[in-house]
Length: 324
Image (cartoon, rainbow, N blue to C red; front, side, top):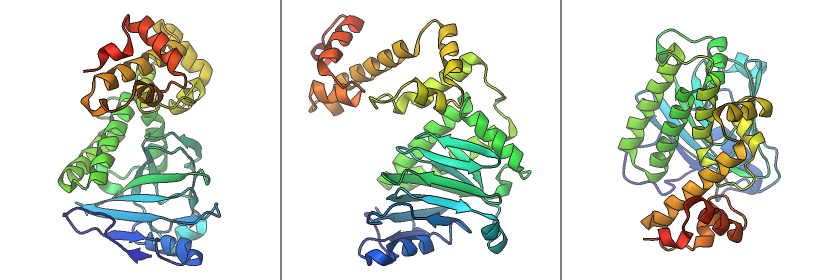
């Protein structure tokens, strides 16, 4: 896999920077797999798509925590009994993909990782991770020592933590911090990325040892956490109550009951959240050059006429009246 700067700004030297671009097509996937070996010990990527395998990986080491970004066509990766025996490794990985969902079988659980949701992976245990082979993905993975929280967590500790992360305020806050971290990483602002890496590790340590008192979420906190986590998804016109429930790791009936107990419905909440997002974009100087139709689309509305109607009904004003 060819070494390449990939548009990096001045900053610390990466521990890994490689791309398959320019390599022979028949060698690209093997090259990509080999390049990951130093960071992703014993993990076996598996190609599941025949598309041209244009991929790159970039990784930095900050205080013993290695943050890497992978951009590639969707494929799978696994850690099985053979690789565990051949390449022992007990590191932990905080994984988050801002714009792609994935399936993870790990620690006796089957997880659906929604976009933007962090999950902790134990490299001392088998797992099977799969991204949609029809789509490209970005995966940010933070490798940390197993002893980062003091006492070494067990597999059960990690499985319990992952369940809490999808239904607690701690999980929503960690997801928001991971989103900021990935933004700084992509922008090449290394000092900020290093500081946020340390913040993510500290937040994870607090969640693991129970410093925030997080346990099983009550319906109100579960619903509020799920709403915060869904904030990055409301612009998807296909986002529905089923996706919302999956992101909270509960059934559709449970989430509908939570909404009912709060005095609202999922449909009303989603409409109001999209309208609020559209209003903020209309006010924002960053969106001045975009049409109202483009803002409606970015906020999750397929029909601009419907958008105008519901916007006026909600705010008693036209979308154009909110433009600076």
